[in-house]
Image (tube, rainbow, N blue to C red):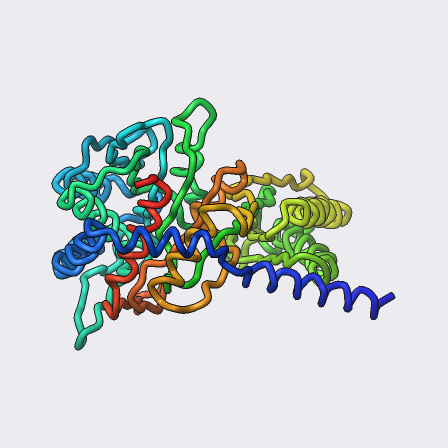
Length: 426
């Protein structure tokens, strides 16, 4: 049985690799080649190179405006003004802070969204001054995702300067709440019931242009807080200790989660942050943890969630069973993150066009993969979505040493432009 399961797991892995490396249909290759050879598109390619220096300057300007999740307003105002200056037909900021710029289509019966997120992972007090060493720019957030924002501005400038109008409406969105506990706030509002119908979604939020994300890795995040009265470590001995309950919960959860994640579709878990307590000679009045669970499968995500919630109750019961005096401990379980999973089929025209464009510009076989990006919401709703790369070279993401090198960075813009024109039906 064990050998059978191993072989089955290997077969499933092989199947995923085969799907990820699916061939590009010749019709899409031909479509891309025909579009790229149009004079107006060639002129647009040349204009992207012409404004490259200003695109870098815009990236630096945006990087130096702090924008942790939930505090994106200042950057949003600057980004909105840049889009107006770039030639957008109209620009507005919605109820949650998303910046939306419209490039109106000739026949606006469809809406194509091009997204770059405004927020970064860095606290408001972080030094985000851009420093240049040789030909490389260094600053927290310079690539993720200020490069993407600068690309959106350059793309709007290019469409306006070359007077290119697609058939369908284009929405260039600077979204809020993509990172961490932002929990895709901007996307959840954009795709809310009763909102604007969106027909396709393109996020610019990756590395090289031959890496295309067509699947969303779902995640569940919880803040769990065990609570008690607290007291002196000697004088109040015998009351419930929230730290003990939390430790019990973790020791119950990890073995079960370990077994659960050894087989099947990749699923992960992490007890990521712990807190509570006031001093070494005090029994804490609370003990809390932040826990992250992820999977490409919504079913598997719900499976590990069930084990987690069971373990919390077991941890609470175990500590309460040994209390000698005082009230029983309680627990608060708060869901602080819920990103759905899903996938856009590799045969979908948007995915095929994404691969065909990347192949045309680089000559490489594009790679399909799953990740946790703003595309998660769209794919979970069955709306075609991909996340494409920014181009150039970058590293140190989510660290103070993040860097960006504008090596062939123009290809990222040309890649995005061709895909937008294909989806907008130019």
